[in-house]
Length: 224
View 1: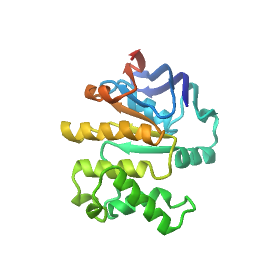
View 2: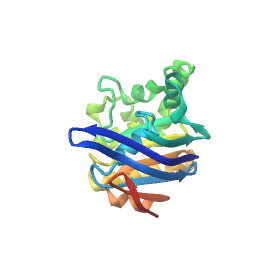
View 3: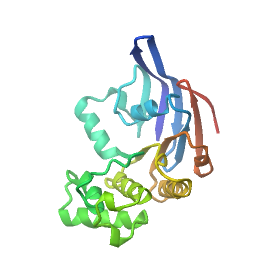
View 4: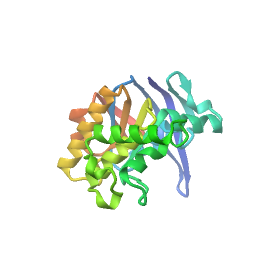
């Protein structure tokens, strides 16, 4: 369960203070696929970074599984990001000199699992997201954009997080491949009972979501 109350994030600029997230409230139950929909500069990526504890808010509270992460100290924040979160990026952010399998194994490095266990889970996750076994030993440069995003999703699932944050997950994909990736995320939210929040300007994502939050100028203008 994610609970956000009165969340505020401000930035100082030469033109003055810009409020990127302005007293936002939201609540998301586990196992739901939720979209933050808005144009560039609307505040959706800033809100995503707050949810991921990549930046600190200037006001309000943010709780994940009954823990207010705005009050956590640095070491606790590191553990939160490691144990509770998975990230999916627009540009995939795969390590280029590692294979698909090795990329998915990487987040489990400090999980206490043996190498054999990490390799087995990585292979299972890649199969789950639909990457052929014949491609699991390939490096990212030998995979299509859609295949690289599947690897990114498998990597996000590696440590069984309770929350996955996806920043423009279809931004570098053609519309057909993008729809496939969104369907995959939607299915995974239910099958893995993992909350997935995606920031996007792509309105076609809406058909697959449990809930839509539309954001403009740092505020939710309405939600469905």
